[in-house]
Length: 166
Image (cartoon, rainbow, N blue to C red; front, side, top):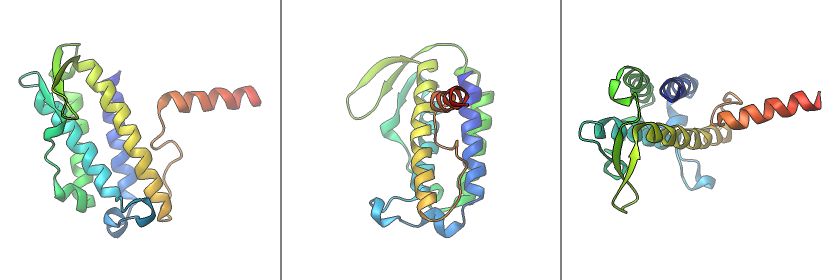
């Protein structure tokens, strides 16, 4: 189920971030444009927060993210926020079913969507940013699990391919 998969992904990120030291969390990786692990963790948290906040009136605006600098610079705060969001995702009844919502993003106005579709989009979006976190961590010599930032379909394909080769 998409709800559980989203929650598990956030929990996996919290576990990965526990293995990152505070300096590396906020250190810019210059040859990657100065990106920081914390920036991607913050972006993901803020994205889910907008999804959840928009459920109240059925209008989700991802462009209105809070861009919380604490989450970007404080690894422990980011871990707490990700775990809280995982819990909220599991418990918020408004995320169940396939209710119609209106979604704004990229400054193009509102488009019709559904809660289920937005959960799928959040999942894909999160995997993408976690792949970037994995690259930033590895560039700093920090090990991350091989499956972190890799979509389920890619993991399934790799497993299938290994079985065929064996």
